[in-house]
Image (cartoon, rainbow, N blue to C red; front, top):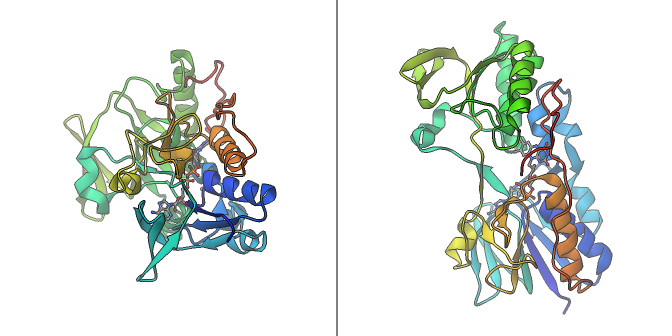
Amino acid sequence: MSMQIVIVGSGIAGITCAEELLKLRPDMEVRVLTQETRGYYSRPLLSNGFTRDNIESTIILRSFETLAKSGIKLEAGVNVTAVKRDARAVVYQRSGDECVLSYNKLVLAQGSAALIPPPFRSQEALFNVLNSLSDLILLRRRRTALREAGDTPRWAIIGGGLIGCEVASDLVKAGDRVTLFHALPRLMERQLVEEDSATLLQVLQDSGVKVLLNCAVQGIQKKDDCLAVLADGETYPDFHTIIVACGFKPRITLAQSAGITTQRGIVVDDFLTTSDTSICAAGDAAESANGKLYAYVTPVRSQGLWLAQYLAGRTSTPWQPPFFKPKAKVHGFNAAHPYLF
Ligand SMILES: Cc1cc2nc3c(=O)[nH]c(=O)nc-3n(C[C@H](O)[C@H](O)[C@H](O)COP(=O)(O)OP(=O)(O)OC[C@H]3O[C@@H](n4cnc5c(N)ncnc54)[C@H](O)[C@@H]3O)c2cc1C
């Protein structure tokens, strides 16, 4: 029987690994299980998804049919719920049925969810996130409905990190009204030096975004037909939609429940192997041996390619993070200094 590789997740880590593996070892059985239903898409394009037409189709890099034709056995719209390490099998839900799939090697490439800070966790019905294509489609529909009713959509974005700034910039460029709340004194403080944060602030303000710095949001409330943001003792009323953009959270629950070592992410060694030698992890879900999370497209793709080489038996040297230059997709903004990582 041919070697069976099971990959959980159809993001850039999972699909890059699957495609490369099939090129290197067509004799292997490569199976991908994913919650997605719309195809393999470019996640970075989500934050510029309001100024682009036909994003629902142009964002798709490969349809699931195309991937199937290339030989990947992919099951879409399924949810992997457990890893039975003793039996080397994963358990997953497909349309209400419980299914089991055996593996010789398992790759956990489940990516990350939006991080929701404690003040908002009990208020899920009142805010949105922008983390997947389904999230974008929902937000675009809401925006279209408001515009068709003759309203200019009013947005509160909570979080002035990379994604918050990108989304604020794109929405205002699309013609909407945007207020950006950031708890700290400068924008994108994790990625930019002070001078570039100041330039970014100017660019966003010039484009029409109302930026509130040092403004920690304590909660959100429904107020008549609109939403209000409570921050620093003040109430900011009248938003149609609130987007929480406070960072990302690697999806570790599956690994954790299976007794695999996790910290912030699923802990891997220099060979992207977890504490179980039959299980690897890559992408946003994985935490490197040096404690870093390489949650950017270039290193994630590099992990997917390297892992394919490794699983195909074509390399025995450790994965090395590639040189990469992150860049915020804020309209009209270019940093003068390299990004911090
Ligand atoms: C809005 C936004 C903008 C970004 N912009 C940039 C940028 O400009 N440049 C850059 O370098 N990076 C950017 N990033 C980060 C980059 O997109 C990620 O680092 C990258 O997509 C991670 O890929 P991944 O394969 O690890 O995970 P993901 O793309 O998150 O894929 C994980 C997949 O696993 C599936 N999955 C999860 N759990 C299960 C389960 N239990 N069962 C079945 N399937 C499951 C999910 O449905 C998903 O398909 C951005 C991210 C976001 C959200």
